[in-house]
View 1: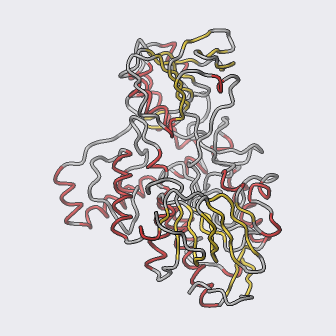
View 2: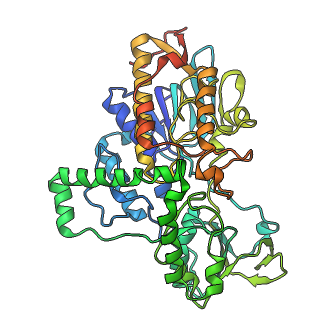
View 3: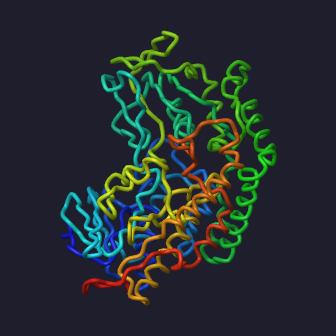
Length: 498
């Protein structure tokens, strides 16, 4: 295991799409004095951690790669998890940045030293200081466990879908799956193939539209590899097709009527029982919660040994799940597919800016709020990739990540050219940005659709999603707008990015 440097110019947290992309682009820009710390033993982030049966992307493969590193080897139009992880490993290896990635290294605490104008970061392997701290930890990195009475006393096998225990044999077992989100609808059909009985606990029915997936032909894959322009055409066409969904989410929900009809038809085709059909039919506007895609979920629910349970869970005993109606259902294996900490990212508790306040303390009253989803007042030289209001309900986060990376690189270049030792967004600029976001959010389906979702924080504000087109986001982040920032000259001989 490599020895950690005590000081670098740039410290990047995480080696998923965000952190890895940032490292590659820093290297290309000549900013070679950087370190990436990754808490796990490999690159990949979400796509390294989520190895549950059936794990796959619900964004088309052509959009789920870096624009600067297209992947001609996708086997399908929607790529499975192993292929995405393999892609990221290949890109990391070929980019030449792995020598500056410290694996099994966890950020325990980061504090901004106002006098030195540097971040001091404590890890489980020692301390590192840096001029800039760039978080690529992501919004889907920390699993959320359900708060259910008695769950800690369950004596069978229990694990989160994002921490799948492959040593547990589900063959013939009685399995309970809590949650009906994106992970659940992928794993339930696979679990149902081997388990003796499956109980699926649904709090809110999701909209599930058909997964229009297909295997790429041999000719297509040859063209992707040998005629890159063909793959670029595929990518461009897919991008604009996805952007056409935006008005239905952000302006006129009635435009999503065809999608709703497709979801209802998916139910009708997959489930013959009218009672079960009614229980899986959502009672809110499509798009209010994340729209899911699957051809196998509804047929799995219709199988004789699979039960959908819609009564609220009262408690978990040593060997059963008990619902509020008093029914006790025996369980051998309990799988919780209850999502992630998205509106209160755990890393925010560990990052302390001016005056020693943590991001979580600053956001406690208002929810996540930053400037352009990337920088935050009171936290000089801190950049967040996949920060507040950068999530999407229709397209690829890789596009958003690349837009943020370009903005960060331009900020770093500006620091070098102008000899700035510290930059942070002005309070008024950040407040204006977020007022506009929340004003736009009021007319979106996420606010008017009649549901509660993981998009909303405890204050009922959507601090997760971007309420405009992705090309608008890219345009707004196309250059570093120094006029929106307070800047400081160096007080020491510490190296300034160049």
